[in-house]
Amino acid sequence: MQTKLPDAFLATRRGARAEEILRSCVHCGFCNATCPTYQLSGDELDGPRGRIYLIKELFEEQANEVRATVHLDRCLTCRACETTCPSGVSYGELAELARDKLGAHRGGSNGIVRRLLQWLVPHAARLRTILRLGRLVKPLLPQTLAKTLPKRISPARDWYAQQQATQRVLLLQGCAQQVMTGEVNEHLQKLLAAREVGVTTLREEQCCGSLKLHLGNESGALASIRHNVDAFYPLLADYAAIVSSASGCGVTVKDYGRLLAHDQDYAERAAAVAAHTVDVGEFLAAQDWAFTAAVAERRIAWQAPCTLQHGQGADGEVAELLVQAGYELVPVADEHLCCGSAGTYATLQPEWSQQLKANKLQALQAQNPDLIATANVGCQNHLETDAEVPVVHWVQLLA
Ligand code: SF4
Ligand code: SF4
Image (cartoon, rainbow, N blue to C red; front, side, top):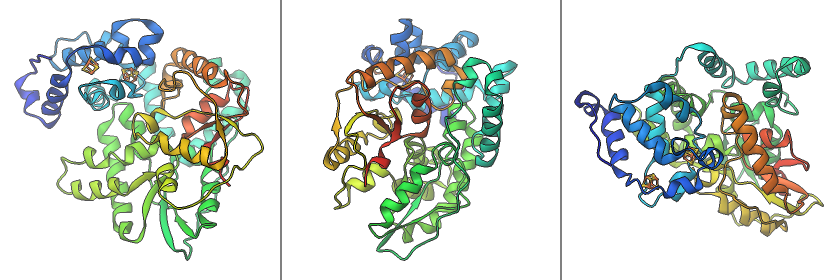
């Protein structure tokens, strides 16, 4: 794609990278076929090709910013377009650059909600308190907001003690995960302890940075990321891996090397932390362990979160582990499509989010499964509000 970015912008790290990505797009449009929002609206500007064009205009200072903001805000950052693109266009990174330009500190009610989400979600204690209050006043809340409340709230749990073990891993707690689905890591810790793997969590762990990145607050995200690098890096030699059971966190931590590549003080350590990080599916698949099915319900609809399948390319490991354990994975149509959760999307784009959820549940439940299994707290919380069968994290299905 031809570009005419201003010289001053091109001279910056962001500008050079934006031009590189923009030029890698040949405008073929293959990506539109797998874009969930393009499928909903049929509008070129709600698909990746149109959004890339809008971003180009934005960086060339030619864009109608209001129009660009509307269509970029509708993007889930699911990265299905990256999986489809034959030219290897890094759409997610380009969207990140564009969102940073549009600014985290927007005005109006949208800006207030965005600031509130950044104040709230990365802090587990705050989030737990507000969600409890929200559940108390749920009947009084607008339907769209009430729909985003989780079915249960996990209590604050003791930090896991470091154990004597044949190997040890650092386990990411995740800010939303420890509040909404804290039982997942409890189960994982027991699963690993039974195989002599010691689990440690760090009190110093902060939000992985994904929420602020999605909301266009790169500097805020990088502050958390640097904090996490400082906390995790000195421990790498003592731990086999940093393990994430929330694919939305894992995909971001795996990206720390790229995100801090420009920072001389952090680049090397951030890359080491990223290289040490694995999804729990990758970790378990690499072990020589046998698992058995944990529940009588054996027919599972597997929902691979976008952050696992498009972001990490690690959904196949999970499917294989579940089948090896004795589960039957029922066929699911359009597996590549996002469920509509997508971080804060369910709050900021409720109508589109609910429509995507309805479509996803129809596909997941078409074969009458006993359970739906997923790999990320956001998808689990989002889907279970309307699912007809229980929605669980797949780790809970292994015994
Ligand atoms: S992002 Fe990839 S698939 Fe989409 S238009 Fe550009 S080159 Fe084609
Ligand atoms: S990230 Fe997802 S929603 Fe956004 S343009 Fe790509 S496929 Fe569409």
